[in-house]
Image (cartoon, rainbow, N blue to C red):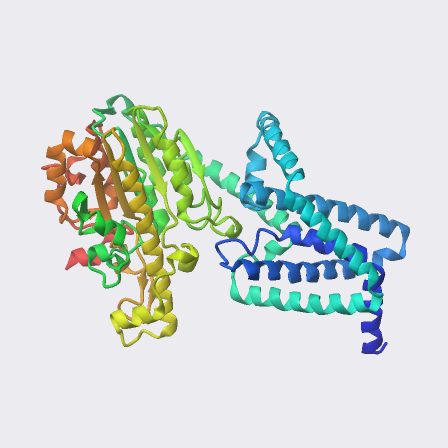
Length: 560
């Protein structure tokens, strides 16, 4: 068969099944509706519409071609309609879930289904039905129906050859757009197929639950629980756990670009620690010490075998809120989800897994849950906010209005001989993510300042990143563990605890490891506990300045 005859045959086939193709393309549109709008991809609205349109036509065309052998038999045609109904069900689920709840068929949605019991499902259904009823009265729905009817009428007026040729061209554009997407982004490719999503995410959920249960079995009950007491000097404690933010890139610490304008405006009410490091170059390595009483120089056993901060403060009558924009399990976090599992309120506002790019959220998604936590009627609260902060890819961590710095700004400010355009742009994206976190910290501190109850805010990052600071290198080395550490107390706390505040100001330049956070918090809240260690508490007169450990070895800078 000549190539021309094959093309003509395909065009005739498309023309004969034009209504089915329209249906498949429409369902394809619904099946990928959640992809281009994800912050991970940052497509302008107009590009999103064009991408959805052409890729949906390409996908519908591909599905129609795959169905060709099935049209030859009656059984095959029955299979086609069964598969189409299944596809329609999944596509509608994806579109409706994305429209109302911000997530399509993703790992997080499958996990929600897996963890939902019958009673929860029955309680959820009335709200869903009400939403669908409201949708049935929406003006936009009727506009879409009218446009669809108009499109069907227009397609019917076309000859089969004209329609087939037009669709073939649109499908080719869609193929090009999808290829460009795959070349540009490392995630979201397989998400274009709902069947692959179900299999991939379903397996991940099963494996994650198995790992989660295995980790949970390693947890130990809080020892000496009867010794955990508190004077509750701070009624509300907000601990903001940053991600990948290097101290050097904060203008609050002298950086040349204005990355922390909000914190600088608040500088007079802050205590800015100048020599704090994380205990690891990885998030998991830091979190297992931040959330437990495992010391930085302990080189055996994992954090789950030590008393956990969440369990300790629960015994001190604090209600614990774990609000996270990171994952419950996967490549970014590790055991932190298990270490926080006894919190009274647990809310993962974004992806349940770091590879679930379609559920990426900006850190501002934590503000509403934080406000709800502050409004909770419990007398004492410990609120953890776990940010995505400046985790790679940096450009996906902030909205477009925080695209402040450019490669030109970096080159002009630093004039490093090794800094080319690409390196400078990466630095600019990193600095923009720092500036975005700064805006959130400003908002968190503003909320704390308005409270009548004694409230404190502690912010630090788990570790930092080297972004071409000393050469053509980007990543985590021994320098990357230098992190910002900032303390804020509102008027109610400051006036009632002036001695503590003066002590904090006096020790802000002493060397500190974030692994000792728990002892710092115990002092700030007026707590006591059998396993509290004064030599690790920077507020204690018994605090010992010693070489700090990073990844279970003495930090190279403390050896000098």
